[in-house]
Image 1 (cartoon, rainbow, N blue to C red):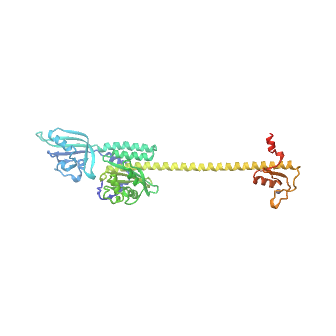
Image 2 (cartoon, rainbow, N blue to C red):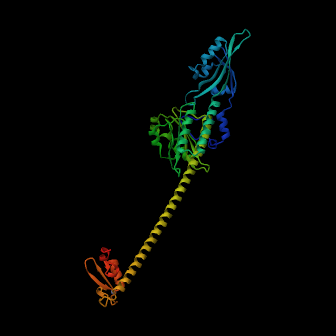
Image 3 (cartoon, rainbow, N blue to C red):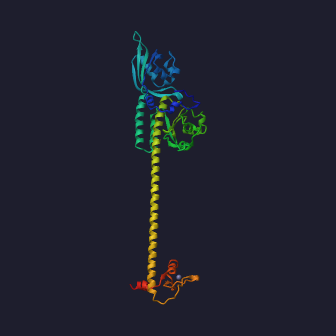
Length: 430
Ligand SMILES: [Zn+2]
């Protein structure tokens, strides 16, 4: 792992963006290498140690012949030195299972667990001269087992199309529980054009923080996530307090109590931006291989979930469009049916009127009436008067069939005045 200064924002090496699932899982499982050290004297001076032990101490701190408590001051108060003292004093070996140890300090610190054996070393007289420390780190094995189980559960959730918010929220909570140090996970979702990031899931960040971040633009220097989205590359900010990327968000981060933020873009298979996956920390922190592997595994999982969601959304939209088109068609068919029915009604009414006029003309043929149509208005009408019409106010006139039809259509309450058609009298006497 490249050392990252707390003062700089560093896009991690390009290899980070290329998921190599097998390698990541191997990193997460770890090699469970045995650690071995030979300590001498009551102060437990480091005499020899294998590379795995030296790696735990931190190679930059290793100096042979120096007391363990001095090499690893963080051990003070953790019970380990006390246990070594006891073994040295009593000459009885001790074992410990899943002993939790805080290794390193500050941003480089991490919690680990070991199965330990402390074996006294004796001289020819049988006196204790030192202690052999043999241990196997169990942190990664245990974490990896939990990780695999949780990862499988997430994939199952995605496969059965659980709502995206539920999947992402579950993933975030699960990583938070898995991590040995307190970590706050955030997933932001990119707009279709990749220009803005929307809230996705961040169950442990305060609401005011999530609300303030919702909708931020992607761009260089827009916090860790906006920059990672813009660069399409991971952005590791180990100390928000001093990082220029956080100039606009520093107060917000302080109020939320977060001090470091590592963000990785979530990319689709075609390389388009789906969102960002971020891990926040309460204190400045530098990511280790383990963190990066965890990030890669879950960035990939989040990509699956989001892509799946997009496909479902597109399907739903296509279905909605098809439904709308069908509804439009139904409406058009109904409108056409209505028009046709109205036309038929009008035709029936016209035929009825014609029949009534024909009957009236036949009935009135013998009745004395003016020679010419009286309904021609100012221009007059020379057609023969054939039909008598009247209205309910008692006015009556004779007209030609064409003017009679016009009058019946246009003048209120005009009717054909023919006894033969059966007037009100006929109705009253029915
Ligand atoms: Zn006329």
